[in-house]
Length: 375
Image 1 (cartoon, rainbow, N blue to C red):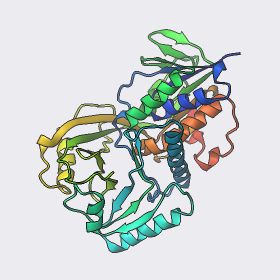
Image 2 (cartoon, rainbow, N blue to C red):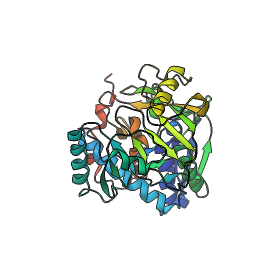
Image 3 (cartoon, rainbow, N blue to C red):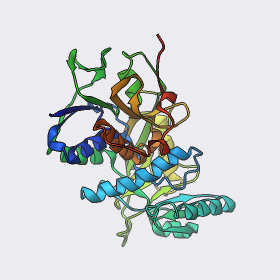
């Protein structure tokens, strides 16, 4: 019997879930329908840094998810022959001004090499050595280099995986979908029924679930980044690392002629996707602090998107309380490109009733974020 599974949202979680549903041993008996209007999707506007190992976040479950998510993402890239313009293990550098803080960062990186091979090599760098790794820099602090770090083009990633899945069992409806009070999918007043529904709706999760008697802890945060044209570096064919400079916005060289700066974190803008000139100027100034002769003339484009956060910044995923046929993943915030692939894989397995034994290593109880209201 054919199993009908719906996915609402085609970002990092939804596209990865679709990919794994297409790779299941019984994929020919699984019919997957994705609903996605693409509006404001965080994945498409994300800066694209995959480097969780030097984070000092105290949420151990988050770190487990991020660490294993980075490993899974590298595996997906290998398994799907992902081109380097999508996933590029270029390495990452994090800088610190204070020597004690730099040593602390370096010691943390060395400690975490024992927990995962994906982190790669760890090297402490002087300011001049940082500039050797990233020749377009004119100014730098000392830093720590991690060879396993990567950059990911979120928009290309989602298209890559959806194109694989479409050849097997995925169809896509490019329209906005939500749930009605029966827990079925509603699109333009037309109702659809499925055996399982995967909600991968990011910041829109509360809105998608609003017809159901649930309290949902999500909030929207706007992110804006800029893309700049830069002068090519003479005699340099280096695959430059991503730079996470202390006190400045993330600095992401792409090839030898493009540079991405950002993204911002704007709690008060929510779902507003308009370009904020003040944020653009702030990001430009961040680039100017590192590279001479950067100006507005270098600006190629500005991108905006909306992330979903929870009050304690923790992710949530699993079965929606009171609705055993509805699965959800969200609250990933700015680490979505790192944690989203693993959440997508977990939700795909849960939708097929496959055993997922290590869920509690990665999450707090979902009732911390989605609660069934008492009548």
